[in-house]
Amino acid sequence: MLDCKQNTELLSQSLERPITLRERMAMRMHLMMCRGCRNFEKQLAFIHKAARELPRKL
Image (cartoon, rainbow, N blue to C red):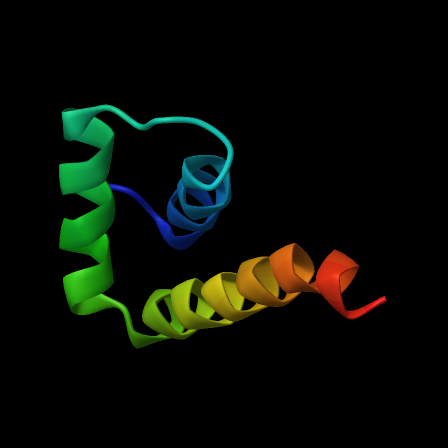
C-alpha cells in the first residue's frame, strides 16, 4: 500500500505519463482511505486545468 508521499508523487506523475494498472489500483485504494490525498488530487486537477487554459487567456 502507498503512503501519502508515494501517492501524491504518483498523482503528479499520472498527469505526465501513463500509469500502470497496478499503480492506478494502488493509488485508488489509498485515495479511498485518505481524505488529504483526495483533496490533493482535486487541487492538482484544478491547477492542471487552469495551466492548460492559461495560454488561451493571454
